[in-house]
Amino acid sequence: MKNLEKYISEATLNVREDRAWAKTLLIEVVHEMKGDSAAKRDLGPMATKYVENLQRSNEQLVKLTAIIQKQTNSNTELSAEDKEELYDMIKE
Image 1 (tube, rainbow, N blue to C red):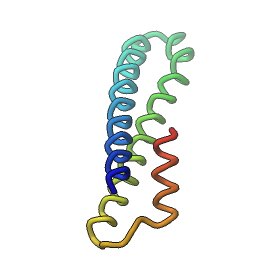
Image 2 (cartoon, rainbow, N blue to C red):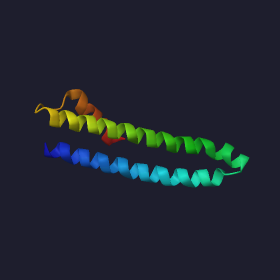
Image 3 (cartoon, helix red, strand yellow):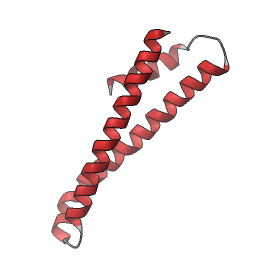
């Protein structure tokens, strides 16, 4: 159980750090694109990637929340699927 808590804490920290970086970079890209058609064309795909990163981090937080909720609502162990999802999130 201690390892699970450690992994959840680590995954949550990683998600928060990723979100902070993606937001910072997205704000910079949007600022550069204002009123400049060439910049919009060149930087638009980059902005899209930052938004996708934010969406993935939201999905990761939802998965973590679901795992924690399952854990607190019942005294059963995590399913193999839950463990696999948690492992996949940590790998990302």
